[in-house]
Image (cartoon, rainbow, N blue to C red; front, side, top):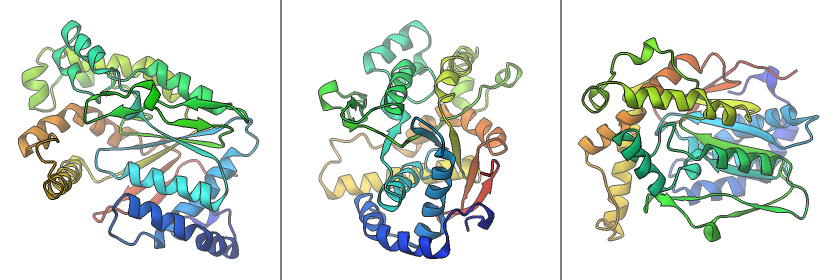
Length: 322
């Protein structure tokens, strides 16, 4: 699967690393409750990708920042965690994993923004709902973190819809070789003004009829988010077929959560979305997701095309390593 001309491991090295990495790789799949056997992808994808990134890191005096972008339900969390395991257990690199979700503004800040700017900003997710300065400061601190020093990394509690108190943030110890920064809009670019003119779904048509919300989202993306994304050294994209798959796979995630919560007696404690609620929720992300489908595959450093079984079945490397 991995292009042979960009494979920086001999077959013997690949076999040896796969044997070394197999146990922690399987353990990671178990922690994420993945029933399918993903071990064939260890040698076919994750270790070659780890070695490719390691080659990209050569000569740098700071941590390599790897952006992982993909629509909802594309498998970003699984992909990023298995890449982390391959880098750490396989190549012995020190890795910090970040999600753009952990840089959400506090609930109070978003509620204030919803009152002052537009009600749709009460829902987290789109550009404008993250504390971008916190993200920039955190990544820069991790990039040059020396031995003996540590950095607290923000964490968001989705059950409470609010940032966790700082005392509960995980601590990352230096130094760091690679920072994996994942999120649905990581690396996104703004749209043109003309592209914003017409609504693309019922949410925009009836709740943003004058375009205030989408123009404000686009302005945030064009300004402070580009400063954040400029810290990315290598951009990886998980590309699904289209919005139909986004709705289907995000609905599957909700169904799994519904079954799990019922089995554990937590149904009353968790906010499980109905299909109508879920459709409305995804509409918040639809405009930018469609835009990314169109423009990002040609410029990302590497694109992983996700098949119907949720596997990154084909790789397109746009920026080969010499």
